[in-house]
Figure 1 (tube, rainbow, N blue to C red):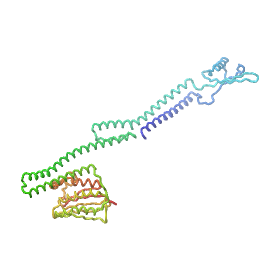
Figure 2 (tube, rainbow, N blue to C red; figure 1 turned 120 degrees about the horizontal axis):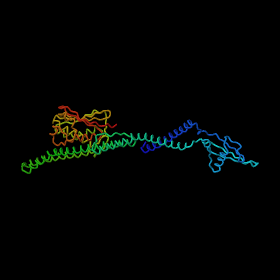
Figure 3 (cartoon, rainbow, N blue to C red; figure 1 turned 180 degrees about the horizontal axis):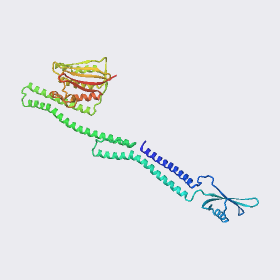
Figure 4 (tube, helix red, strand yellow; figure 1 turned 90 degrees about the horizontal axis):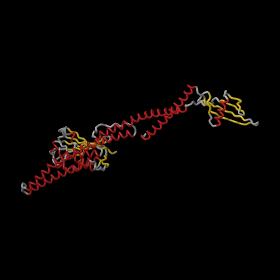
Length: 435
């Protein structure tokens, strides 16, 4: 129930309750008054006295009224003052008259006792007003006490908490006490606090990442830029004094520009992935055929260095996964390039094992290199993180596995690594199986 309807119902209930209680107490007041005073307030037929007059002569009366009293009655009737007091009793006068055929005039005066004592109406009125006010005040106090607990106090607490938020205190959770819209207000303020806290956290994280990014990129670009300058200076200063040396220097300078280009491309791709600016074109793909295609793209380079790369499938029949083939190719390429750098010539081998579970396809890229140290293992998917061995490799941006992780998780998969020093490393990817 909304606060508007709640207040309306409270007002109606308070009014009805006040009227009912006042009516009950008023009835009890009249009942006990009648009981104590032995009055006949509730009697429908009071005792009536009669004075019968024939031709201005009293011929019958139920009480012994004097002639003066009878004349007083007649005078009161004539001036429309239809009341008469007798022995501290107030009577209402009613007259009926008729004339017989023999021209005798008869008048009947009825004296109806007024059972309402003098001042009773006024006292009863003020008593009812007093009871009504007291009942109304008590009922309102009960209602307001409940409103204070469920509405006023929570709003006061919310005001205090918002003051804390204004002062930058974001760690205290705001309770959702109260009723109806007040409770919803508390939830909204708590959500605002959480979002504000997250916003500040991400802003601080963004600033730290920006500083780290500038530092890392500056460090990574410094080496190839220095090398390019060295080669060009060697040509200009005559160190490369033959055409063959000049060609070799310029060729190495071009290779270093490719390294710079790789670093910049990886940085731009990672930034877009991190900001969710790259949509995925998810399609149903035969995973074995897809991996064979990826291996063929790398087979010549492996053979040129005396290394081996092959696919081993443990699947029974054709199995499909839902991936963006173009983006996932970058994942495979990054993992393969990373493995190729860490295995030896002539003896190096990378095996891509494909197996399945009830709901997923598992890809394991297992090499026979030196492996990954245990202290490096939890960090290899972090951006710009490279182990001591990886730092020796040129042309690496430090973003390859971080990009792979972003793409895999963007497609709803998981990626992790296992390794033992001296026994090679395995990069494992789990993809949802397409039924």
